[in-house]
Amino acid sequence: MKKSIPVRKNEEITVRFEDLTHDGAGVAKIDGFPVFVRRALPGETGKIKIIKTQKNYAIGKLVELNDKSPYRVEIPREDSHKYGGCQLEHMTYEGQLKYKENQVRQVLTRIGKLEDVVVYPVLGMEEPWHYRNKAQVPVGEKDGKLIAGFFKQRSHEIVDTDESLIQLPEVNEAIKAVKDICSELGIAPYNEETHKGVLRHIMARYGKETGELMVVLITRTLELPHKNELIEEITVRLPKVKSIVHNVNSMRTNVIMGPETTVIWGNEFIYDTIGDVKFAISALSFYQVNPDQTKVLYDKALEYTGLTGGETVIDAYCGIGTISLFLAQKAGLVFGVEVVPQAIEDAKRNAELNGIMNAEFEAGEAEVVIPKWYKEGNKADVLVVDPPRKGCDEALLQTIINMKPKKVVYVSCNPGTLARDLRILEDGGYKTIEVQPVDMFPQTTHVECVSWLSFIGI
Ligand code: SAH
View 1 (cartoon, protein in one colour):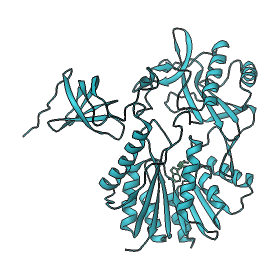
View 2 (tube, rainbow, N blue to C red):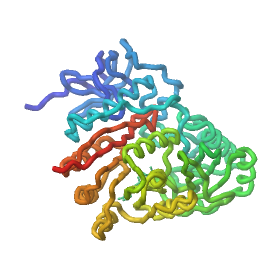
View 3 (tube, rainbow, N blue to C red):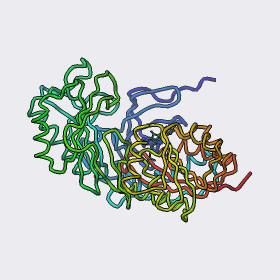
View 4 (cartoon, protein in one colour):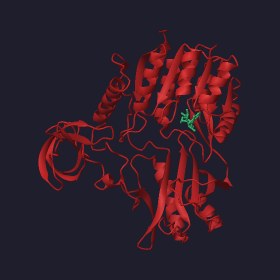
């Protein structure tokens, strides 16, 4: 029998919200049929208007809220909901941390079938605002004026913004200054539709510990107009700037950076430190965006490795060597693997910069390089993985199972793929001892986890 959809488009109904989805929308059920509503919280009741119906669910819009959740807070800025990104800003920080903890536990049980796994409360920030050390904002035009800010949710319309509440003040200040300068110099904003104009994005990155700022101008054109005046004004108005970079992206694409990068003033790198380790960061390097919580995350990873000094460690997905070098301070020898060759060059430079002699790096896919090492007779006592959202490749997981390092420390930015991979490792003889979520991205639904697995045999 075909199940009928119990709601119609434009219908207004009063509902009670029971749950939150993984992207932070409230869930109400109408005769068992789920309706997703942004900015609604579990326990709340309110009037909604149905804006879209699908076979298995509908989407509604909040019209009026009746009973409010104790976790609800006023959103900090009336217009902030336009920007997307901060999906949980209508929730108290305590509520956000609880939500993330539940999310991790539910996914590990549902996808990973890890019934008795220990999940700790999320390690959050004391002050969950103004944490991001990097911003890259799209540039456009409105009423003949250069604007820069955020894309409106699910659209390519740019909302002109001077301040983001989750970026460090230095980053906001840099973006605003560069925007003003470009506007004053009459640099033509890029137009996505016609693929004309010059300036596509402004990027700013700040080393919170060192106070060093990098500005990157991304243009469609090979030439950067008013280059000298731009440099002059940026250095005058932003005294913390240590590096100004020009990147050319002449393609019709959503990818921000193009293939050509030139340092037009100052250094190729800015520096930052995590704990006692110093890192050189170039315009294209991947570097964690929440420096305070990165330290919390890496400290936890280090604790879970249980290093005493003589161990051999493999750090798969090592980026510019951040975790590898952090662990090298306590390990015998660390091997890092990373697919981006440029990042491996950065990692080697970072090892040198810190006088760290017991870390080696190789460029390549973790699922190819680590099996090769294993074949050559190289084994690790501890293996750390920190993969992108899609998780670890099966071939890598299989090699871990064959190699049997005593411990695996899994750093993950996606609980779904973490759960899938933990299940595979458990079936191969590992036991997940603990999972510690860390809040790297307050106000958003993202959650990072560090997990510790021990080999116990099958
Ligand atoms: N551990 C680092 C980087 C983590 S991000 C840090 O904390 O800073 C994940 C990294 O995995 C990225 O640098 C990405 O380039 C890399 N990567 C993606 N697929 C990979 C693969 N198949 N093999 C090795 N590295 C990969």
